[in-house]
Structures are given as C-alpha cells and as structure tokens.
Amino acid sequence: MQSLNLPELTAIGLALALGLLIGVQRGWATRDEKPGSRFAGIRTHALFGLAGGIAGALQGRAAVFSAVLLGASAALVVMGYWRSTRGQASISGTATLTGLITLACGFLAGSGDYALASALTGTTVVVLSQRSRWHHWLAHIDEREMLAIARFALIALVILPLLPNSPIGPYGAWRPRQLWLVVVLVSGFSFAGYAAVKLLGPARGVLATAAAGSMVSSTAVTASLAGKLRDGSGDPMLLNAGVALASATMFLRVMLLTAALARFALPGFATVAAPGMMVSLAACWLILRKAAPAGTSTDSAVSLRNPFDLPPALLLAGLTMALTLAARWVLDVYGDAGLALVLAISGTVDVDSAIITMGNLPPGTLTARTAALVLAVPVVLNTLFKTATLIGLAGWRKAWPGASAMLASLVALGGGVLVVF
Image (cartoon, rainbow, N blue to C red; front, side, top):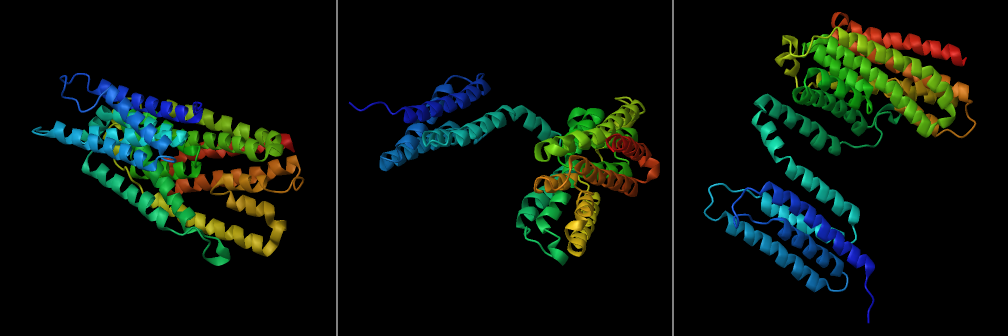
C-alpha cells in the first residue's frame, strides 16, 4: 500500500484554505442577495481552490488530467458568469475574475509555490474588501486629480523602466534610471502628500507623509514640501513642521542604517546625530503650535491645489547630476586620499550612499571616531543642501521656520561632535 504523500496533501490543503478565505469574503459581500442569485459563494470558491490545488499537485505525473481539470474548472467559471448575467441590467466581471484567480491561487499552492499563492490570495481579499472605499474615492476624484495620476503613472511606470541603468557621461557619473528615480520620488511624495491630506486632513496628512517619505528620502520630501510652500498649497507653518519632522526622521534613519551596515561607527555617530534629531523634533512641535487650528479656512481647498509638482523634482535631479559628477572628479584626481571628500559630496543629496560606501570598506580602514566624523560630514552637507533647496524653492519669507529648524539641528550636531572629539 502506497504511503500518503505529505507534501502534496499540505499543498492541496493550503489550496483549499486559500479558496475558503476568498469564499468567506465573497459570501460576506453578497450576504444580502437573494438565494440562487449569487454566482459563487463560500463553498464554490473553496472548491475552486481545491480543484486548482489538485491540478497543481498532479501536473508532474498526470499532466493531461491536470490540464483537463484546470480547463474544465475555468470553463465552469465562465459559464457561470454567462448564465448569471443573462437578462441583467448591470454586469460585473468581479465574480468571474475572482473565481479564476481563486483557481490560479489554488494551482500555485498545489504546485508548491506557497508564498506566491498566499500573497496573491491576501492581495485579492484586500482588493475585494475595499470595494466601498474604492467607489467612494472614485466618486470624489476630479479631472485634475485624474490627470495627476496619469502623469505620475507615465513617469514612474513608463519612462523609468525604459531608461538605461548603465553609466553615461563624464567619468560614467550618471545612471539615467537612478537620476529619473529622484524625479519619481519627489513627485511621488508630492502626490502622496496630496492624497494623505485629502484622506487624513491637513495636519495628519502632511506629518504622516513627511515621516514615512523621509524613511526613503528626506531630501525628496523637503523638495516636495518646498514646492507646496511656493505655491501656497496649505498652511505654511504646517508644511514647515513637516520639513522639521522630515529632518528628524533622516537622523533616525541614518543611525539605523549605520547600525546595520557600519556598526563599529554607531556609538560615536549616534552621539553626534541624536542631538540633531531631538532638536528637529522639538522644532517640529514648536512650529506645529503656531499652525492654524484644524477646521479653519487655511485648512480648506488651498491645501489641495497641486497634486503633482514636477519642477522641484527636475531641479533636484539636476543638482544630483552636478554633485555626482563632482564626487567622481574628486575620486579620479585625488584617488583614495579624497575618500572622505567623495563620501561628503555623494552624501549631500543621499546620506545613505555614504553609509553604504563606508560599510563596504575593508575592516580597519577607519577608526570608529574617524568614521563617526566622516559620516557626520555628509549629514551636515545634506542638511545644508535641503535648507538651500527649501529656501531656493519657497523663499525665505515662507520657509524660515523649517530652514531655521534644520540649521538649529546642525548646531546641536556640532555639539555632539565636540563631545566625541
């Protein structure tokens, strides 16, 4: 007697469970419909997952039977859709697509690709459960916002993948895809901030975008907020508070990255960077106290005027090109002797690059104290660069609170340097 094949049973069991999960959502969503009017509920979706799982498990030793089972199940889904939509005034393909996706997820699970099957099932359940929210959002979107979505999709999903990632230009300093990624980040944070303000309200939206976006690039967030300050798209004090919070998040991010990639430099660098983070947080709190109270006129439509801001993104990309070229020139002329200067210049726009470069140095190249000082330099230059970007885009009159917060963080950072050295 042949023993049970535990891996195949596990795969088929997972396929059944994934189908059941989708079925629970579909059953709940259609719970108010008349009996017999639903295309498929909890049992049918569970069986779709089971059928896909069996087909996936048997494809290696019974390929013909597996293909027949899979094809017949898919045909039943299509036939069910055709029958349920006959004579109906409104037609929706959601039920049929959900059935086919359930079948596919079951097949992936049966084939042993547990992670992909589970991820796709979870994504499907989330998308299906957000139906009311999607429809509400779509009902409130206007033509300007739709054009903004289309433009961002163009630069992020069409232009970016088509650009080469090989070095070009003098010293091979420029990678077109990386440079355009700067444009995508800045404009993306601008659009994300717009959406956050609309969904969460001005205060929470701006601060949430500043904090989350700065875990990727505080420079891009600063450029995005500077563009909004320039256009008058929101309460100036609130936007400046976002700049201060972005600066604080940058200090936290670089300390975490140093702990992960250059741990030997962390004690000294944390002593240098932590005061700057605390001052930035304090400045954010002080600026927020001067922001307009929620619900006042300054929180209204003016904060939603510019969903897609491209000029700050293009300016930052141009500055990145210039600084990258300067760093390559220093490395070519001075060699390893100019390592600290190269790290400083390259970290002006992106501090992470300096930390990553240091983490890849051979052990013993720099002492812990020297490494802390070397890492402090790009942080200082990056903060000065962001300050100049903020003032250059928004003007001192509108940007002085955020610019002052970043300059104050540098004074605190200087105090940390004196402690270390």
